[in-house]
Image (spheres, rainbow, N blue to C red):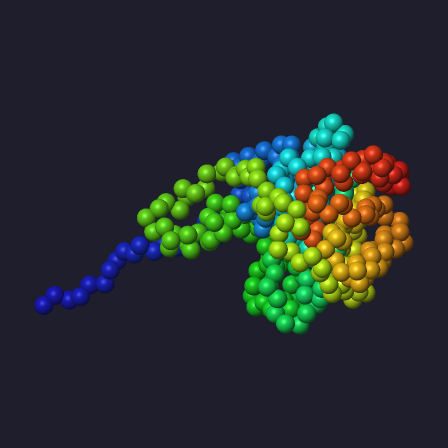
Length: 367
């Protein structure tokens, strides 16, 4: 019986210090340059009336590119939630569209994001809106986010809300936000590391929101690189909600909203922080307050709303921030509690331009 021989070769190999250093340099270069290189592959064509595609509303890396392009090509950027984005209208019927039509040139860029309540919008602009500097910014203040303790995020019970990656993960705390520590840390990393937010962009834009390993489980025989076409979906030329007056839907005609007080409001505190961020970046800010659909409120609730609106105006006056607080639109111009229909946006744009509010804002800012 022959003796057992030990193998004299191995598939493993050792790297020298120089090889390890080269590998580290390659890894760092990939980490830093891949997001930049991808921008050359993935063309962003944000022409007139462009708005971020509805299905990519949580793609903050893409939004940062849209914001940067808008800042480079337009002198006025419009920030806000789905009221700015245009939930009940097509891209060619938004506030930005009608403002451009009023002035006869493409000056206004639509940077609205669906569901971006003030706490999320503040995080979005702070972490992904660095290109918004030295611009004229129209900032929409939607009182809807102050209509109850629940939407103000102040309830203790666990809340289910969107844009979790944009809210403060540690301080200031949100009572109903229950998330594991590891996930909170991951969200902080994603906001501060371009490579991480870029990989999230790839997942949202090309893999239906799934991770690549998760996608391969659902497509075991497909090449995982095939979805990476480098072609972004275009915004759909349609309204996301049925564009009919609220009176023809099942929305209650006599709503009694539980309006919160401004002191202690999480959303209001976030809105003020957002204004501060924009002003620190030397932007000229014009705030549009509402107009909320007062027609669906009970009289007592409408009175409380008007008190809240005056409180918002008082703060803006105290800070010498130009603002416009238009009265409620005609009832038939609303799709729900806060979203105008096409005719509503057209009327707002006309009054905003013809009323001289934009020129007044520039004058007060000394521009």
